[in-house]
Length: 344
Image (tube, rainbow, N blue to C red):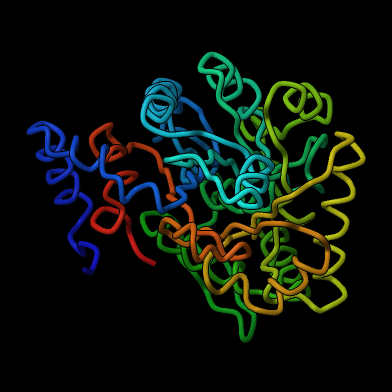
């Protein structure tokens, strides 16, 4: 059966109806759910005032209250585990009844200041995928810089492009232009990406203020969390599109991220999250290099859940948790994914 292709509003209404009438209970108890692995994908847990927020609000997955409710819910209804525990369970062929993994991408510091205390409160493990080149540095991720420049700049139009440059508007069309820029950067190879970022920086020579809002984890944060049930995985070094990198650069991004994290925490890194993570950002070549560099699992940002008996260990789908997800929608997404997840 195909997923719903309604607007988010209609899906929210349906989720509300299913939960309020109690129909969701059947899905929560469905024994067929035992045949699948659910992996939740978060980025940030943060309370923001969206109209005045100067960076990329789309990286915020949940407020503190929303995240606390979501963790209480999954603790009640799922068997929450780490990738290390999943590896053992698959080897023994005895996975828990309803396995679920909580993941975070990038390595923002609010994973430590906000998410980590809530995870500890509920005694839950989680996996944080680190873009290792940014950890411990006072440097925003490249995509946060782009969002800041375009939201804070005083220009009305700016030049941008991989071929002949075009003039893009800001002002009331800022969000449309930001989407165009981000989509182009996501598809760029390493040389094109560097050139485009340089082009933007020439026109928006403003160093981002309020950097604390997009601070990354320190290695001390990472080590403390690692001692308390938080698992760490790799998210490359530079957070570029792996499918567009040269063979040598791709191997470096995966090897160096893995070895740096392993050196800092003193434990093996089992899992990789492909940066950007959509189908255009990884391919069979990328999967092969992930295997060769000794990752046991790799997760995508493609939406879905995974059949345990036919698990693609280097193409694991995730349930994307994005800001303003209601409790009804959260329950519907994790229990009835074929109807409520947005594909692809």
